[in-house]
Length: 232
Image (cartoon, rainbow, N blue to C red; front, side, top):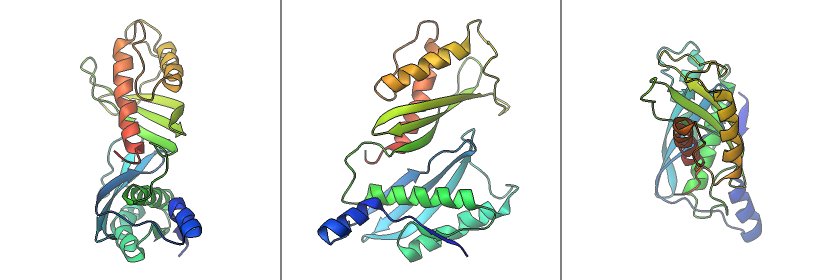
């Protein structure tokens, strides 16, 4: 099988410059892959006595709904979710075999494990967030029982891109040109995006005429930022 391995940049730096590898601190560490238009992967890594002892893998759709692999139409993804944890433990690294038919999922889980190991390391990067694109989900609106899903792209602890979709109660995506309350939602979305890029990440001030949009969007962005955190 094709083998894909991500070696921690942090470990490489310290191995080369100091001749030692960063140690792993005991605990449980959850991390997330970059989000694609189709969803995202997560990994919960358990460290005991400085070793990886277990890994739990999950995958979410573009609507931020967890996939149920017992009914998922591509069984290869479920096979990968069940088998890769043991490989990560055996390899003691973010290293696993690619499963044919589930390449994207496996790559996402490898990245998520890699990031979890960075969180577990006693030597961490000098920044608050991982660079990448992270998926966040808001609370459900009391007005229309919809929620928002956002893709937040971070670079050097700043938001550099943002996109959003509204998920309706039947789990369909609302056409953004559809005006629910009589004001142009697309204009408010663009105003929010501009403000999100300019402001402190996750804290956009209320936009006149779009209070609910800003509050719900801020919650979704903060959820994405939480997934991007290197250390709390």
